Length: 348
Length: 268
Image (cartoon, rainbow over all chains, first blue to last red; front, side):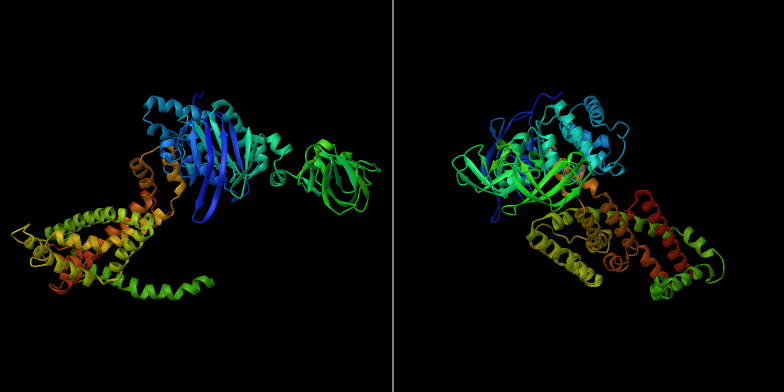
């Protein structure tokens, strides 16, 4: 359906607002047709980076190459990227059709072309029958679809999305995410998506770029950032993780009173971390399992969450288990043991 | 119940100072000098009255369009300009707004009259030989009225521009629309409510203008308010004056209701 999709290369991008450094030394390459998510807590610089990609903000340092051409200083008008704003930013005085037709009129396409393209886009985002309504007559999810259709109608090489689902409720959000995956697969456009919702990032992206304090922490596939986080911030920002103080000696880690083989080098490291779902619960003593005391048991439906405390150094731990597999006897005060594969250890 | 009690003094005040005299005027229009509708008959059958009504309408429409159009860029500078520009524009709007209409009109008189500042300067510069006639005609009246009414057009426009979502403009720019297109196809339509509000306010105010047409029109460019004044204090014919007042009130009221229904101004 779409032929043009651009590659973006950011080289050591920095952005200052007065004396405040919003972004520092951001380098990344986004390949044509990729779906890259910029993820981070608020104030991490992810939106500022998106604004620099769009051309609405200019970088203070560094350069931005689009398909190999230096576009660091070109304004938004000249880049021609599609953009979906937080709050949709639809033209309130135009109908759905007129909103979607606007970029096509800007490009001076013929009336017949505009008509068929608008119809095609309305079909694509599932808004058939709503074409003559004004945005105020639509629900949040429908307005979001119009914004998406408007941004994609003129086949921009890149689509930038600034927290597009933040105003939608949870169910609608899931539905829109599916829709987004489908549209991305069909259009083949390069998508750059900003969110602070980690599950959204994991579900949608081909790669995730994680920002904190204006710096890029890691950019990798969802599996890699989750399974092999580059640092403790990334590990803790994505999902739950148990971080335990540990000491390291030639190939072995001492943690919570047990000794485990190390998965890799551990120079200067002070902590060992394990995702809760990688841990298994034992009700009997085992030399390779960490002794813990149950402090609380929380029923969450299909799973139950155990809050634990290491017997040796009182480090708090979290362990999620399928409720059906959890013995009734595992109650607060009870001594248990947790075990994990040494290869699941993360060292920070 | 308690709410009604709390605003009762206001209602009472309005009733005594506004509704009672209004009722008096309406009553006079059908009772002075004798009961009947002959005052209305006379007013509507008088070609002089009609010529004044047409002039009033013509001037007021012209003033409305001019004041709204001039106020628009001014408001853009005030709301969206850089800080120093904003301050200068704000002073230019607020200072005349606080001055009395009388002193402002006399100011224009000394500026525009045959031996006024403007004519003197133009002669000194050798641009003209004979004084230009800029007062005692429609031109002077329009200048004075537009100047007085611009701030009234600015406020509704400013509120429309301040409420605008900046991201909508960014969306249009990002699509690649030129500044010209963004302004005419996005910015102006989004302030349409403000434009209608401004025009309506200016028009309604301008109909009742007395001081400016009297001083700058100099008795030659008579508008409806001055005509009513003449019928009260110079002829004097209270019945005719009351009928004229009632007709204007009904006409302006009807016009307002129609426009508000049609455009939905003020319903947001």
